[in-house]
Image 1 (cartoon, rainbow, N blue to C red):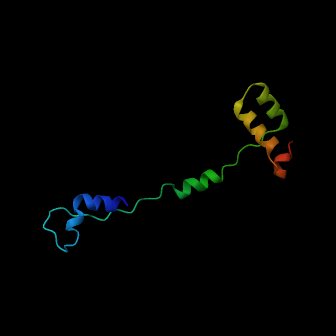
Image 2 (image 1 turned 90 degrees about the vertical axis):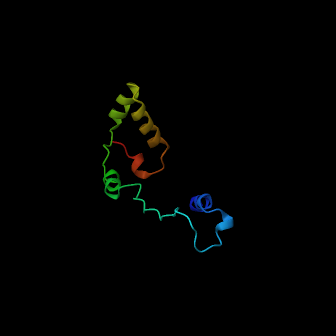
Image 3 (image 1 turned 120 degrees about the horizontal axis):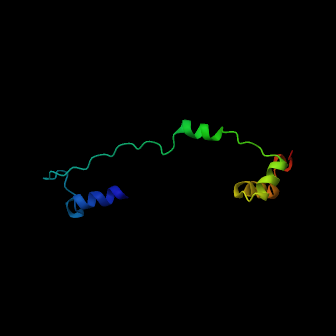
Length: 88
């Protein structure tokens, strides 16, 4: 869509029927864009093992008003996954 608009700015639609244009303007093909996410970085991020907190660590974190630990505790309470129901 952008290319169509760009071409219409350079070559007006009334001139588009001509095969050869006497102009110094030329529309070049764009370059291929690199991927927005590095595959190796994504795999490294996926493979990071987060420390599983114990019940005592949850209690200590909640009582010390640690919002991160509170949010993890809420997630565990609301989760229906069996591994989230097990707490040491």
